[in-house]
Amino acid sequence: MIRLKEIRVNGIRGFKYLQDEEKNPLPHLIKLDGKHLFLYGENGTGKSSFCDAIEWGLTGSLIESENRKINDKAFLINKFCPAQETPFVEISYIEENITKKFRRDAKGKKTSFDFEDEAQACLIESSRIEHFVIDTKSSKWERFSALLGFENLIDFENKLSRLRNHANKKHDEIRERFKKYETELKDLRA
Image: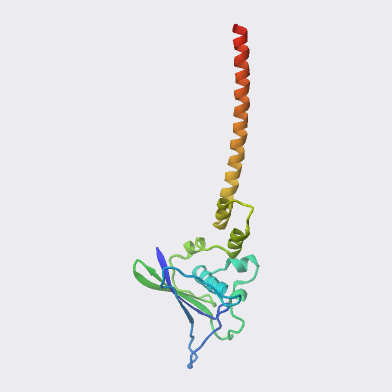
């Protein structure tokens, strides 16, 4: 199991590209050293930018830009970022009590990260979260399953429920016919 420790972001989405006096990159630093992280802020303060930076940093792609059919780089790179600079995301994480770093930049360079494939499965796109919160017609189970991407499971459960109801109805019909035949057989014996 890994735990994210720090995120360094520069030139990605709402994170303007920063430099020190010697023109060295000066990333925005977000420390994740608490047990929980809560993001709160007005619209336009960087909540989505933070989540997008983590998603892109960990997976190399963004579900949101794919949904909008926008090139990741066009969606990601801050429009005020100088053309000669390279936006990046650097993630420090702890694995088996050892701190490790992973970095991805907008030019396609990245350092090795063992969990890239698994990271994609841990992310939930914002439209699923929005649907979970707004939907009042579906049951909590259906909303929670859809949130986690289990639509096929919900469909299977619904089909199985219809099949069970149909089987119960047929069973009851056969039982009634059997009772009818049993009564007729008793009348014939008498």
